Length: 342
Image (cartoon, rainbow, N blue to C red; front, top):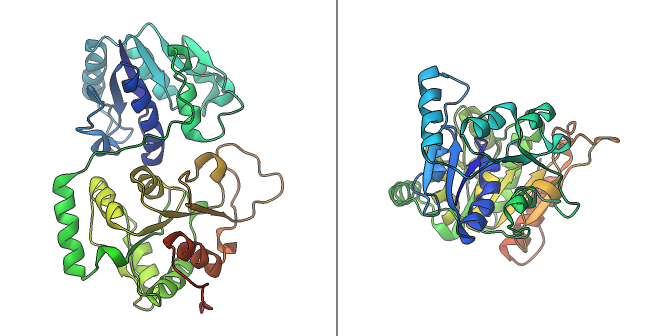
């Protein structure tokens, strides 16, 4: 039996689909994954994947690449195509795959509701599926797989990137036992905790013998520099990393502090302790799940009930002292936080 996972992007969403891969593999399915370029490095060489089918992204889309991807999907002869994304494009790839079973969520649970018409089988989510991981696992029910509650998110080691990260840490003079990764970026501006708050947090961590490094993705260098400037030298901008390189950086960290974005979820996937900062999104659905991990959420405006894009959660209202206290608690350090100058 062959199953195709269709989760094209984004990084955090791909991470949250990994338990479905583990469950399918554990039940004897040969699994392929259709993915766009940005998230592809996370899945290349994954030991549980039999096939990885590159799908062209929206930028630079070329008809020839799309035809090649469609031919590759059909060549594998999938028995079921699972649309975890709920978009027109993901639904279209499910049908293009040639599988006789295109399985996806019903209209109510899709980002683009009318795309449900392309599904052969439509699933209503059970009330118990409160976390996005369990929403994904529920989609396996039409295949006879009951896996809600599974949290097997293992990512393989990236050996080449690990060597580069170790060199970067040695050059920066940062020992792993003192490393705290601060990630100020995020997919939506409304998700961002202020750079000045990250800087103040870095000072509090530095005062306790820790070494904050500010991680960044493409185009986020100015934001990282603002955090470093606000820290008064307590934090340093991290050396450049690829996506697998960030995974290896997070493996070596004692703690990661980040908003609801890919770097937070990657840290959760590999078991690094985290403090997650939430505003527009609900940590009950998207947040960390390991015992001891902390999710802090800013107050949301009254009536903010949109499932996918709640209005701004006023991220600046999450106090630095509150985040520092959560970080020290997660690190198991004794004593409460000192006053932190803003």
